[in-house]
Amino acid sequence: MKRGKRPELMWGLGLNESESAQIQEATGPAFFLRNFQNNALPRARELDKGEKPSAAWIPWRVWNAIPEQNREAFRSLEQTQRILIQEDSDKPVEIEEVLEEGFLTVVRTPLTRAKVQDALFRAKEVTSLYSDIYRMTEEIFLERELLARKTDQLLFLNKVLSSATETMDPAGLLLSAKNDFRMLLPVRQLNAVFWQREPEQEHVDAEIFLDCRMSPQAEASWAEFLMQSAARMGGKPDSYRVHHVCGPETPALETDGPAQGRVVALPLKAGDQYYGCMALQSDQAVRLGKDQIQTLHAAVNHLGLALRNALVFREIKMRADRDGLTRIHNRRSFDERLVQELKRHQRYRQPLSLLMLDVDHFKQVNDTFGHQAGDEVLRRIGQILQDSLRSMDLAARYGGEEFAVLLPHTPEKDSQKLAERIRKRIEDTDFGLSAKDFRVTASIGVAALAAGSLQKENDLVLKADQALYTAKHNGRNMVVVSGKKKSRARSMGE
Image (tube, rainbow, N blue to C red; front, side, top):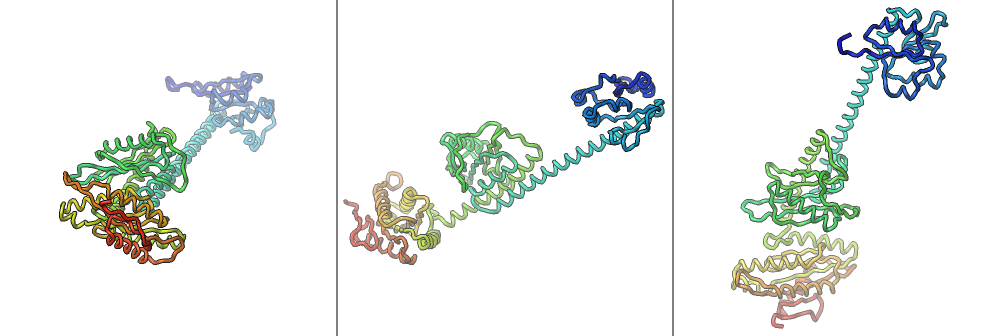
């Protein structure tokens, strides 16, 4: 035995002095035999903890005296090989019975060195074999666990990639991402900020996307957190607009702001420039393994590309659908929407109204105050229209100084009231550049399709245009409703 190495433990269960001495002598100092007397055998609960002997020597006479319910406890000793000792006077035991009783082998007395060492050799071989099998089993289970984890991560990445191709709407992508990230993390909230810095641009406006339902305090906390994240990434936006990301289901009201230890901030990059940041908040502290972090970064890279494409697509579409000067819809966008709304009107039998607006004496504004002042008038009127409408309504620059306003689900009476409010706001607005303040007025024609009517789109536009012509002909700065002999009309001097 090497110096400092502790002897290997063996048990003897009910061995007599002769048997104990023979075994100890045969094994030498490399083993230590602890012998339990017949009346002091270890109990079942003592076998589950404490010592783990490599071998247990049990005479047949002792084994037969142990109650059956206690034998099962000895049979369950996985790391201990049991060796049966038979005396010459005992009836030979069949090998099947030996194995059935849970013994490794049987040794008959006298216990010579050769017999004892041979039994111990077998015990060590079997123990080593069991150890190898156990280790291999552990490795197999570990490999299966890793494989299952890799499979889950691949499914997660596949889901993210699939979702990223289903829509070109940034809010829709974020909503899908929130659901997809739940395959990897217990995500409760997903919020984001995007910004775009143009060359030589003084001010940077950010867009913040927040979960659908938030308390004012939570919304303010998240906006502050996301703006600070944008500043750290070099965006440094000085203002922001908030969009709410809503799914088909109505979620519970969120009252939690960003919580330390539960938020994962994920920068979004295009080329070498940061353009956004996503913030995931989970229900508990976030602790990710190295492979999970790699998977998360891979998903964010793909999702970031999809989000960037969606933002660019939205900007291009906006430029195609919007008037460059007023930033409201253009003629092409209006024509497309009018066709859609007429189809809805005919299908669902809902009223539909149209306003046609023209700036009075616009040429005089350009001639007197300059084209920059004229442009400012058009911009301000576009803003007045936007501020006066619902989200479902559409305001468009129809051409030159003429505007069109499409009002779904709006009867003639309500559209006339709205037209009068718009006319009054324009009349009361101070226009101009620097010290050159002036006022303008507008004439508005109103036409409406009653619920269930089957008129063509040209009829609606023609009637609104004719009403506008009547307003201009009757003195301007008034609202005229198509088909009515008397209309709401006020001149500038009134």
